[in-house]
Image 1: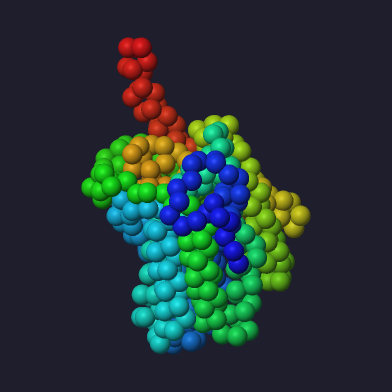
Image 2: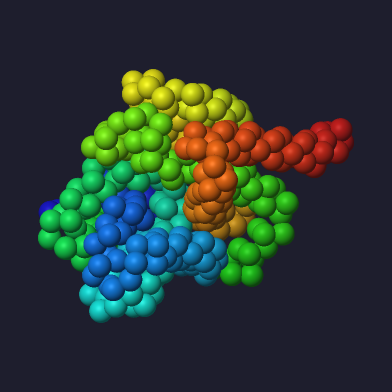
Length: 410
C-alpha cells in the first residue's frame, strides 16, 4: 500500500486543495467509524455467549454495553478538551491505538470485571475520534460543502450496522465471542496506520487549553443543543431498543425476520446520513427542525404500521433515514454554538447521543413494564422527538434575543 506524494507525513494541506487528499483521508476516517460502530453494537448480539463465557447472567453481561456508553460520555469531553492543543492527526492515531488496545483487552479478558473495564476503555476514544474526524473532513472540503463532508465521514457507523455488526455477530457465534473483539482491534490498528499515512497533518492550537475548551459548557446554547440530541434522538432509541419483540409480538413474525428489519434500518441510516449532509449545507437549523418533526410523525405512524410487515419495514426505513439526517445537523449545530471550542463541541455530540440511548431505552422499558404493550415505546419516542423540537425552538428564541441588539445597532 502506497501513499500519494502530496500526503507526506507532516505536510499541511490547505482546505479543499486536492480532492484525492479528501478521498484517501475520508476512507481512513470512515474505516475508524466502522470499527467504532461494530464495537458499540456487536455486544448486543453476543450477550448470551459473553454471559456464558464470563460466568454471569445475561442482564449482568448487559452492563458491558453500559460500560462502553459511559466510556463515550466520559471520554468525549475529557479527551477533546485535552487534545485540542495537539495536531489532529496525532490525536486521531492515538485514539485509534487506545481503541484497538481496549478491544484486544476485551478479547483477552479472563473474567467479567476485566471485560467491564476493557469495554469502558474501548468507549473512551469514541466521541473524540468522530468529533475530530468531522473537523478534519470540514478542513478538507470545498467551501459550502461542510455538511456533505461530515455526512461522508459519518458513514462508518451506519455501514457497520448493515455489514459489520451482523458479520461480527456471526463470527462471534461461530468461533467464540472473543474473536469479534479481536476483529475490531485489527480494524483499529489498520485505521491508525491509514490515518497516519493518508490524513494530512494540521498543527494544534497551542493557545488552547482544557480550561478554554471547557468554557463551552458555560454557553446556554451548548446545553440546549445537547438537550435537543439527548431528548429528540432518544425518541428513536425508545422504539429501536425493543424492535425485536415488536417484530415477533406485534407484527407477528418469527425471529428470523428480525435481521431483515435491522437491515432495513441500517440501509435507511446510510441514506439519511448522505441526505443529511446535503440538507445541512442548505440550512442546519431548518434541517434539524424538519427532521425532528418528521421523526415524531413517523414514530407515531410506526405504532400503527408495525402490525403489518411491508408498512412496518417501510416506516422503519423512513425513521432511520430521518434520524440519520438529524444526527448530521446536530453535529454541525454543536460545533457552531461551541464557538472557539469546536473540538469539544464536535465530540460532545456523541455524548449527547449516548445519553439519548439510555433515556430512550429506559422510558420505552417503563411503558412496556406498565403493561401498555410493544407499540407504546414508539408513542413515547414520538413524544421525545417532539420534545427535542420544542427544546430546539427554545434555542432559536435564545439566539434571536442574543442577536437582536446587534442587529438594531447595525
